[in-house]
Image (tube, rainbow, N blue to C red):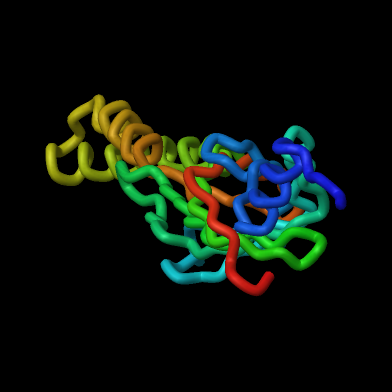
Length: 183
Protein backbone atom coordinates (compact mmCIF):
# COMPACT_ATOMS: atom_id res chain seq x y z
CA UNK A 1 0.00 0.00 0.00
CA UNK A 2 1.33 3.42 -0.99
CA UNK A 3 1.12 6.34 1.47
CA UNK A 4 1.01 9.98 0.29
CA UNK A 5 2.84 12.51 2.41
CA UNK A 6 0.81 15.43 3.81
CA UNK A 7 2.77 17.91 1.62
CA UNK A 8 2.06 15.92 -1.54
CA UNK A 9 -1.63 15.70 -0.58
CA UNK A 10 -1.75 19.50 -0.12
CA UNK A 11 -0.09 20.11 -3.49
CA UNK A 12 -2.53 17.71 -5.20
CA UNK A 13 -5.51 19.37 -3.49
CA UNK A 14 -4.39 22.84 -4.57
CA UNK A 15 -3.94 21.83 -8.22
CA UNK A 16 -7.17 19.86 -8.26
CA UNK A 17 -9.12 22.86 -6.91
CA UNK A 18 -7.82 25.10 -9.69
CA UNK A 19 -6.32 27.66 -7.32
CA UNK A 20 -3.45 29.50 -8.98
CA UNK A 21 -0.72 30.16 -6.50
CA UNK A 22 1.27 32.19 -9.05
CA UNK A 23 -1.58 34.61 -9.84
CA UNK A 24 -2.17 36.37 -6.59
CA UNK A 25 -3.14 40.01 -6.16
CA UNK A 26 -0.11 42.22 -6.65
CA UNK A 27 1.46 40.03 -9.35
CA UNK A 28 3.23 42.27 -11.86
CA UNK A 29 2.92 41.37 -15.54
CA UNK A 30 4.64 42.94 -18.54
CA UNK A 31 3.77 42.62 -22.22
CA UNK A 32 3.54 44.30 -25.62
CA UNK A 33 0.37 46.11 -26.74
CA UNK A 34 -0.84 44.90 -30.14
CA UNK A 35 -2.58 48.02 -31.46
CA UNK A 36 -2.01 51.76 -31.42
CA UNK A 37 -4.38 53.68 -29.17
CA UNK A 38 -4.72 57.42 -29.81
CA UNK A 39 -6.93 59.52 -27.53
CA UNK A 40 -7.98 61.51 -30.60
CA UNK A 41 -9.58 58.40 -32.19
CA UNK A 42 -10.06 55.76 -29.46
CA UNK A 43 -13.52 54.95 -28.10
CA UNK A 44 -14.88 53.34 -24.94
CA UNK A 45 -15.33 49.62 -25.55
CA UNK A 46 -12.52 49.38 -28.11
CA UNK A 47 -10.84 45.97 -27.79
CA UNK A 48 -7.24 45.84 -26.57
CA UNK A 49 -4.82 42.94 -26.42
CA UNK A 50 -1.36 42.61 -24.91
CA UNK A 51 0.88 39.76 -26.08
CA UNK A 52 4.16 38.24 -24.92
CA UNK A 53 2.97 38.72 -21.35
CA UNK A 54 5.37 37.51 -18.72
CA UNK A 55 5.80 37.47 -14.98
CA UNK A 56 9.06 35.59 -14.35
CA UNK A 57 8.49 35.42 -10.58
CA UNK A 58 5.14 33.73 -11.21
CA UNK A 59 6.50 31.44 -13.97
CA UNK A 60 4.29 33.03 -16.66
CA UNK A 61 5.67 33.41 -20.19
CA UNK A 62 4.12 34.09 -23.63
CA UNK A 63 0.64 34.74 -22.25
CA UNK A 64 -1.93 37.16 -23.72
CA UNK A 65 -4.14 39.67 -21.86
CA UNK A 66 -7.39 41.05 -23.21
CA UNK A 67 -9.47 44.05 -22.26
CA UNK A 68 -11.15 47.22 -23.45
CA UNK A 69 -10.69 50.98 -23.41
CA UNK A 70 -12.78 52.04 -20.41
CA UNK A 71 -12.12 55.80 -20.45
CA UNK A 72 -10.85 58.14 -23.13
CA UNK A 73 -10.74 61.92 -23.12
CA UNK A 74 -9.50 63.69 -26.21
CA UNK A 75 -7.18 66.60 -25.47
CA UNK A 76 -8.42 70.11 -26.07
CA UNK A 77 -8.27 73.67 -24.85
CA UNK A 78 -7.22 73.36 -21.19
CA UNK A 79 -8.09 69.65 -21.14
CA UNK A 80 -5.30 67.04 -21.05
CA UNK A 81 -5.77 63.67 -22.74
CA UNK A 82 -6.80 60.74 -20.54
CA UNK A 83 -6.81 57.02 -21.29
CA UNK A 84 -7.74 54.02 -19.16
CA UNK A 85 -7.72 50.37 -20.17
CA UNK A 86 -9.55 47.68 -18.21
CA UNK A 87 -7.93 44.24 -18.53
CA UNK A 88 -10.26 41.35 -17.78
CA UNK A 89 -8.84 38.14 -19.25
CA UNK A 90 -5.46 36.38 -19.22
CA UNK A 91 -4.74 33.36 -21.41
CA UNK A 92 -1.59 31.43 -20.55
CA UNK A 93 0.52 29.75 -23.21
CA UNK A 94 -0.86 26.33 -22.16
CA UNK A 95 -4.46 27.49 -22.83
CA UNK A 96 -5.46 28.05 -19.23
CA UNK A 97 -7.66 31.15 -18.98
CA UNK A 98 -8.18 33.45 -16.00
CA UNK A 99 -10.76 36.12 -15.39
CA UNK A 100 -8.67 39.01 -14.06
CA UNK A 101 -8.82 42.57 -12.91
CA UNK A 102 -5.60 44.20 -14.07
CA UNK A 103 -4.48 47.79 -13.57
CA UNK A 104 -2.02 49.42 -15.98
CA UNK A 105 0.88 50.71 -13.90
CA UNK A 106 3.10 51.88 -16.74
CA UNK A 107 3.28 52.35 -20.49
CA UNK A 108 5.05 54.47 -23.04
CA UNK A 109 2.45 57.14 -23.80
CA UNK A 110 3.63 59.89 -26.13
CA UNK A 111 2.19 63.39 -26.52
CA UNK A 112 3.12 65.67 -29.37
CA UNK A 113 5.30 68.70 -28.80
CA UNK A 114 3.27 71.93 -28.88
CA UNK A 115 6.16 74.23 -29.87
CA UNK A 116 4.96 74.80 -33.45
CA UNK A 117 1.42 75.42 -32.23
CA UNK A 118 2.72 77.96 -29.68
CA UNK A 119 4.79 79.83 -32.29
CA UNK A 120 1.86 79.96 -34.71
CA UNK A 121 -0.44 81.13 -31.90
CA UNK A 122 2.00 83.86 -30.90
CA UNK A 123 2.48 85.15 -34.46
CA UNK A 124 -1.24 84.93 -35.20
CA UNK A 125 -2.05 86.78 -32.00
CA UNK A 126 0.48 89.49 -32.84
CA UNK A 127 -1.05 90.02 -36.30
CA UNK A 128 -4.59 90.17 -34.92
CA UNK A 129 -3.43 92.46 -32.10
CA UNK A 130 -1.78 94.84 -34.59
CA UNK A 131 -4.87 94.93 -36.79
CA UNK A 132 -7.23 95.54 -33.88
CA UNK A 133 -4.89 98.10 -32.33
CA UNK A 134 -4.68 100.13 -35.51
CA UNK A 135 -8.26 99.80 -36.74
CA UNK A 136 -10.26 99.90 -33.56
CA UNK A 137 -8.03 102.09 -31.41
CA UNK A 138 -6.84 104.23 -34.37
CA UNK A 139 -3.11 103.68 -34.32
CA UNK A 140 -2.63 102.72 -30.68
CA UNK A 141 0.68 100.95 -30.10
CA UNK A 142 1.08 97.76 -28.11
CA UNK A 143 -1.73 95.84 -29.80
CA UNK A 144 0.76 93.43 -31.35
CA UNK A 145 2.41 92.73 -28.00
CA UNK A 146 -0.90 92.12 -26.26
CA UNK A 147 -2.09 89.94 -29.16
CA UNK A 148 1.14 87.94 -29.16
CA UNK A 149 0.83 87.27 -25.43
CA UNK A 150 -2.82 86.24 -25.83
CA UNK A 151 -2.05 84.00 -28.81
CA UNK A 152 0.81 82.31 -26.97
CA UNK A 153 -1.30 81.66 -23.85
CA UNK A 154 -4.19 80.27 -25.90
CA UNK A 155 -1.86 77.94 -27.83
CA UNK A 156 0.02 76.90 -24.67
CA UNK A 157 -3.27 75.88 -23.06
CA UNK A 158 -4.27 73.77 -26.09
CA UNK A 159 -3.24 70.27 -24.97
CA UNK A 160 -2.04 67.44 -27.26
CA UNK A 161 -3.55 63.97 -27.59
CA UNK A 162 -1.77 60.94 -26.16
CA UNK A 163 -0.68 57.95 -28.24
CA UNK A 164 0.31 54.48 -27.05
CA UNK A 165 1.90 52.84 -30.10
CA UNK A 166 1.59 49.19 -31.07
CA UNK A 167 4.68 47.37 -29.84
CA UNK A 168 5.03 49.51 -26.70
CA UNK A 169 5.72 47.75 -23.39
CA UNK A 170 2.87 47.80 -20.87
CA UNK A 171 3.16 46.97 -17.17
CA UNK A 172 0.09 45.62 -15.37
CA UNK A 173 -0.56 44.73 -11.75
CA UNK A 174 -3.19 42.11 -10.93
CA UNK A 175 -5.92 43.09 -8.49
CA UNK A 176 -7.58 39.68 -8.74
CA UNK A 177 -7.40 36.50 -10.79
CA UNK A 178 -9.75 33.54 -10.99
CA UNK A 179 -9.20 30.48 -13.14
CA UNK A 180 -12.01 29.80 -15.62
CA UNK A 181 -13.57 26.36 -15.26
CA UNK A 182 -12.67 23.90 -17.99
CA UNK A 183 -9.36 25.53 -18.95
